[in-house]
Length: 465
Image (cartoon, rainbow, N blue to C red; front, top):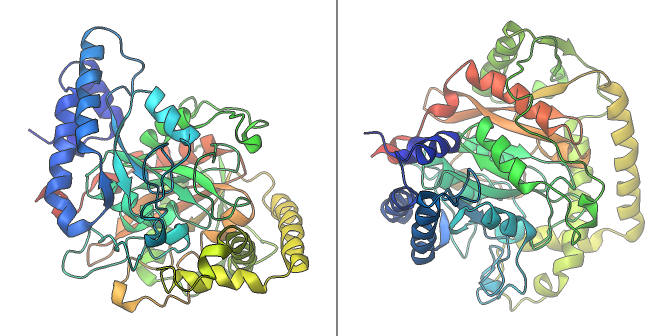
């Protein structure tokens, strides 16, 4: 029988409801997979095995007694090591915080537990979530499961969650995205990631990198699972004022409406320079697929390049990171990642005037892009410039987020979905970018695309070994 770990969550829900699967068996399956694969993949910083088994037993009894708290009762989840849980260690990927005890519990974690989900443990992140490659010098760099011969980039900063979900060590997980940190690991691990709009999901209790840009989001097997998890995570939170004016959506309502009649923008030809040929080929096929499904494909003229917008995004990120972390990064006795420390320290050179100019430019460009894309339901791009590269080949002075950072800068939302593989078997990804708070549209387009193929159903060989 196929392992339940290979089922997306929406299928696991059906199996539990039909009493073909119990939360106890499901959690045992994932913990067994973690025990087997973790030595090679290093996705977790902490595995919550004993508590997860207790929670699974309690969930099983409640469900059998007719007291399930909801459809997700008994479903496990992996949590990025930025999410605080009161009384537990929250390192934020930093060896300097090995003994840091969280003083509070993140609102999003409370929502997960209220829905009956089971916390499998904390997953690796780039230190302070500041980096897209997925590396961590002191706590370890997770291994991309699609190549066990060469240690390749797992994507960051939500590296551990991406690897855990990609290798079927968890059915889904939580990431955060400041410049691509949900979408990059989704792309390189062959899974689905949803970058939400500011205020859609509370950031209370999530260790901050850049409050102007930080957004939590799901990393899942497919689009339907992303919609399910978004429905749980969204909502007004008195502890996060940015959520109070955001109206909830029903992510499932229009999921299956298809794309017929939608207007989708093609990436400008000028942005194709520097993109890997196999990435471009998969992207062009994806655009053709959506056209065949009934979408109208448009060529757009945009007011600025993705790289220029990403550079301003980087200035905001660096200034805000330094404001939060200067005490640590300026103390040379602290054991910080030698690649992350200079990124944060760069914020010291950004004057208050430059920071305010960057924020003002952000508002100006949001208006300009809004005008340029008026009447367009989404803009399609590759998620990444290249497939995952060897860790040994990383240039830490560069970012892999050239096609993702601009989305945060403009406060848009986006889904990253698998759209093919290289000749060498590495996953590729399509990015579906929608206007702010239009997550339902990104999910709808992503669902239509995924039902036209099976890229999202494939698993790395190590997962099945």
